[in-house]
Amino acid sequence: MKNFEVIIIGGSYAGLSAGMSLGRSLRNTLIIDSGKPCNRQTPHSHNFITHDGKVPKEIADLARKQVEAYDTVKFHEDSVIKLRKTDEGFETETSGGEKFYAKKLILASGVIDLMPDIPGFAECWGISVLHCPYCHGYEVRDEVTGIFSDGDMAFEFSKLVYNLTKNLFIFSNGQSALSKDQKNKLAQNNIILVEDEIEKIEHENGNIRKVIFKSGKEISLKALYAKIPFEQNINASGYLGCELTEHGFIKIDSMHKTNISGVFACGDNVTMMRSVANAVAQGNFTGAIVNKELAEESF
Image (cartoon, rainbow, N blue to C red; front, side):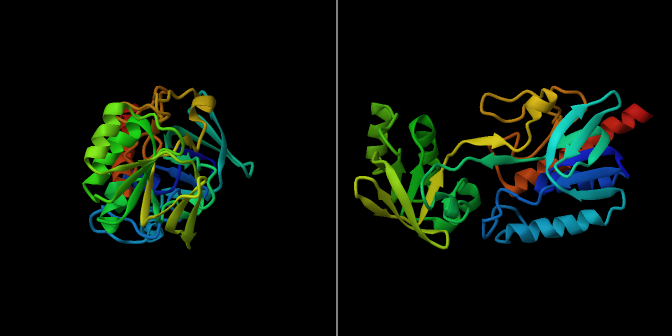
């Protein structure tokens, strides 16, 4: 079968949640996923009620098993390399050469984190180099902690992390863009700004031991929060003309609709609030809205 009512690109938390909504609504749905979630290195997921502390893959595997129980939802494991709008809806082409068609398209494709060229950084990502204090901060509370960021982003982020630990450093990885007033405020709270360039992160199986600087300085840490750039997993703007926000997220309205009629988006690709709980909630909502739109069109 090549024709579906809905194609969901991305089979992680948002995509699976949308799939369950659609499966329970008897919609013929295809979920296409490459099997490479952004949190695949993360040992435990937190701040998701009823699943707090579980391994992310354990949550995803259970979700997929439950979605597979709905006969109208099918899965295809591959990467999407092209999207095209047609007269009837949308064409999706995978790296394996398969083409699938659907009336509606849900982009739950997530993002790709762009790692800095610092040895040890990528190996620690999701383990001790962290993106979210809500997801991981409790586990490293009161520990010696760093923030890999600079400027307004570092200043605002430090307020959240300071609530969890007072043993805090900011690593600007070079001359800082923080203002004089911001530096004074950090100093008042005993937050230490380090402007030396980082040479590498010393770790053991992804657990940080110390940050080593090109100047020869070394600082032992338990955790490092990092605000790093990203790019979309799917070139939705290039393929379909979907608008992006100034921060690089797919732009959606309150109904999770993009600017392209029939294309919806949910999950990490639309918001900086990256968490399992948020992705599940967004996917559930998006699936319901897509079903409603299909119902109205066929009534």
